[in-house]
Length: 382
Image (cartoon, one colour):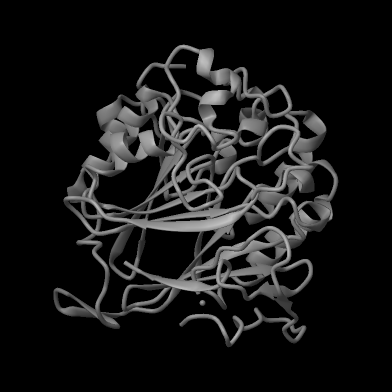
């Protein structure tokens, strides 16, 4: 989220929503996941370590030979893996946009989100949860305690990846430092350890991390990047992506897409508010990269990147971009924090179908309602 932005007003379907005035529907209240709305379309040292110890960059990155067979988009419901036929089933990734106001004022809403996720792990085949940054509003023990309680409800139930937002650094969102002391305290490497959590950029901190998991013979890679990532962080992420070329990759970072569905670009779009270059980290060693710079430096030349997920701007939008080589990239922004109670508990349900279609919907486990407008319920194709 942007600093002092409570008053800001910017200008399994894949769903993105506008923060204000989106219609909602109330599904039947039951013990199972409600169906989607019927109207929806079907330190600068470049060190990579794993959570077991401090490893060199190469040893922390599994070679592609260690990644299960090719992870390209599936065109059918079955995969032939040698003599074994695997029946492919839809699976779900849940995205949690900016939860900062829940951590500061509405912890019961944050708990409702993660408790619901746990209750739906089997029914929705939830394989991963990602947080798009701004976990807290101010980096204070009291708020990290609330966030830690909510997110650690997922422990041993479903793995998750966390992105660092500008509000997760000290200073109330101004991001004048990259100090992650409290984040590291409440989300230590040992507390985040899981078979899919493969490595980190800096020793002792999950503020930049990567995750590798398999669904029905397809490999998926999540690379989580800090707010306005440094050049060295992008170089590290580039190595991870190139070491796993057959894995479908999701880049997770806090600030990337603007409210109008364009990438942050401090050089050509001076009208865009809250670009990472306007925060205090701009003055720090290591540099800062906005959405367009991440696109050019990291995504254009890594054909395995299929999706980018972000928050930060109080709106919902998405952009599909093509490259000279590789398939299109779907870039998706969601941030509900201008809604009542800091977002009313809306999260993203992204359902990956066996035929390569992704259904995105926006649902609030707290209100038990969906958003059904076009920015919150739609489909994409891998």
